[in-house]
Image (tube, rainbow, N blue to C red; front, side, top):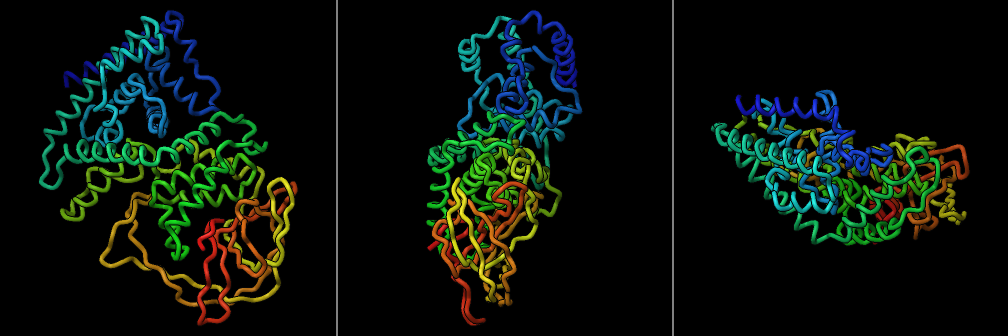
Length: 472
């Protein structure tokens, strides 16, 4: 309790000090927040300003959203590392009196706490050319972070439970996952760096015009090409529900689809973006080593719970779409000026005609065909696939065609992005996400599945493409 009181007094002192800091510290103007539309830059400036003493830390009502925004920034793949921001994150995330109240945040911020490095801090102070006032505040913050981490490690070591090893759960497991994530990042650095580049372009685009002006996003074509190659090489011969589950549980698929949703929303292909967003919305959110550590702790906790049947010390739901600012903004952008239909439509292709500006007009035949009914069951014995956004486990599926129903076309012509319907020919069946808007082209579509139809109930449909990506 003495250390807790000391920590609280330090926080109170820092708040009082910040009231005079702006005028005294020349760095305060350097890290002025700027436009909140540029969310990566503004988050960096706002948290750095607080870390060096220019602005007071958030009150209790603002702590959680600011922690989420800082974690989101720090976990950006290939992003800038900062001992100052890491120390600030550790201090803010561990502002608790009881160890039990700090464990969930420590699953994330323990990554930063274990990498506090005084030499790197001094190098950063020099590289950023911080004022003496900023340097003093940064060093004091760094010391607080070390103290908070020592308090956390000591407390975890003293927590005893016959069913859970707390030091293993909140230190060893997240650390191993973080190390594995860095290895995975290096193996796929080109994909992650391209995704980060697209995310930065979204962040730097004029916020007030997002969704109302078409933006040329550099690297979008390369990401489309990379995703097509990846899906075609890993999902050939799979049924659509199995591919959907794969995308909800796969780290590279998440990174690629997230980037495609971001760039397609900015480029004006909003139904494409809405469909791509849906593919990742209900799956596991992948990001960086902090998020990886949390997921590993959650999975380890669930495994212990299955054996002990005691309530787990960590719960799901702490990393979802809403905690990813780029994806949350993408969802909003994809819906601005466009009405996205809730249910998909299916129709048989009649004609395919280029319209210009990256659009293709497809008309549909008026006739009947047989459409399959998919049935998926959990593989037995149960095998964990991924964590859903509700924090519940999702098991591996095995799917088959259970039957067919007759389908008749009643669909008007739709405009598709040229990239999404490459190779589409008359006679193919398109199951599509649809939308509409007031300007031309007014009726829009995105191909969720493209297949050759089953002629009879004994035939199987032949899946040609999924999410606009050829699988043949």
